[in-house]
Image (cartoon, rainbow, N blue to C red; front, top):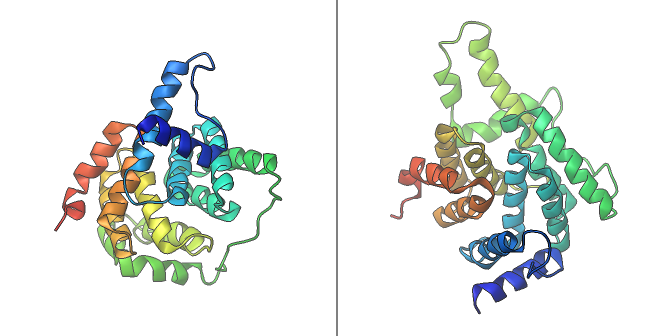
Length: 252
């Protein structure tokens, strides 16, 4: 099967329709795009369609490419990804890209949900209270990352020497990573892709590659996730991520 046929098959699986032949105002560009993404990149590596589409949703959220985000939320639903899984992939971007951009993505996601008849709000995935969020976040953070952040920022003036590490623990891990709807493995793999797409975050990419490996992803899965993200975030950001995590991702 050549890449044109592979593209047609994958596009139909994801969207229920046919890829561009000669339709529209820019059919040449769309043929290049679709045949590369769906006929080549989507065929390379071990990740299944569910994880690939969650990766795509994550990168599109980071990039704020909202029309395409709505389209891929629809693709997620079409292949059986649950609304909760999609929502959790978008929600967990907040500590990395900020609340305003995440709200933009949530609005686009909810438009796609409404178009498919998904009732909102979705069921709660919270597992912590105001009293437990710190300890619950620390219980996820410490086994994978230890006290690296707390130790690194002891030089900050009070009260920030304590507040900054605690914000990461309470907000990044306590408010988001404690939520149900996605496994710890999935969250870490999506975080690697998120940071790669964000750019200028090579230190964090390398740390979260280690985190992804510790939480069950293989080297091949991490590379596959980054390569799958490449058509949406660009080749330079793929190479930046691969280069900074070369030691962690190199075959034994």
